Image 1 (cartoon, one colour):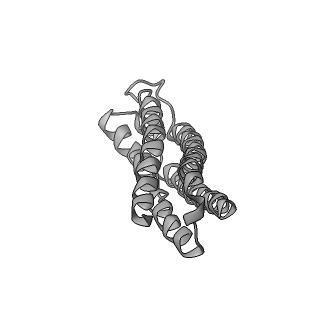
Image 2: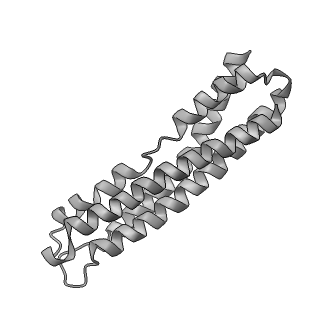
Length: 158
């Protein structure tokens, strides 16, 4: 029975997060649409700050949707929630919240500038690296926060 519950949590969590991930990736691609060879091309700092904002919103929404999916699934199975079993549930949850979520997309921004032949003065490696570091830290923090919020909700159900 516990394995069935774990599989159900995994499935519902994946479904809940998939929509958020698709929406976030789409918004990042929309941000890239402004990158072009014209002088009006945005500077990499502005693009990366926008991507950071998009990632932040996506990760926050992932945390909320993830918590809701786990709580709604487990609320029917409260009597099975032992301390050991909730540990197994949290292992499933942790796998769904990697600390580098969306980081690969953000890294691709450099390639977008190159492929779209943006003016050289619009891209700075130093600015890109600084903004990418901010995105990386934000992703890790928000993923950890989401896991802790879910852990608290599961413990509360137990």
